[in-house]
Image 1: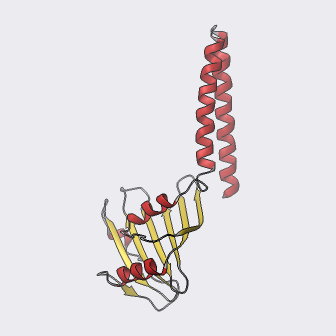
Image 2 (image 1 turned 135 degrees about the horizontal axis):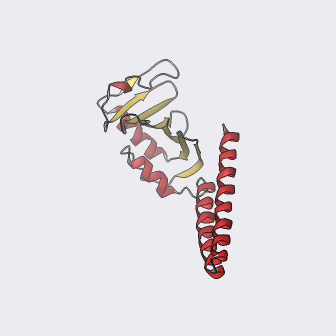
Length: 189
């Protein structure tokens, strides 16, 4: 899967570079070599800027980006936290983003209390259970939250049915029972 993504990116770079050369050659033949150099340079810089943003997206992820994604779940971090990891993967129609934060004991206990006090809180005793399987019963535009606990963690799950025929969005916030880790997952398949 990663090999296919790299191949597609290389083809895109080759195609964009070819377009820049063609732009310059066409404008040079029409008698506008300076305009060709200027437009090719501007287009090349824009392409380079977009490439840098896409390639270094994970490294540019900040604390404010993490807080913004958590706010969608009505999860607030009052104390200092540290970004432990941040990774995102994308393919033609899939997107996966996850980050791990080390949060304070106060924030951890408050978030766990909010999850446990929610109306639909459920406890699952078997490992790897809890992800709701009734997604097909929701209408376009629905945003649904589930709050549950399993043997290892507390989880707040958000499901958004975007549009008919389009991939729904799943987002999960995992609070580790043993440590002070908060893991956020964003899945679009």
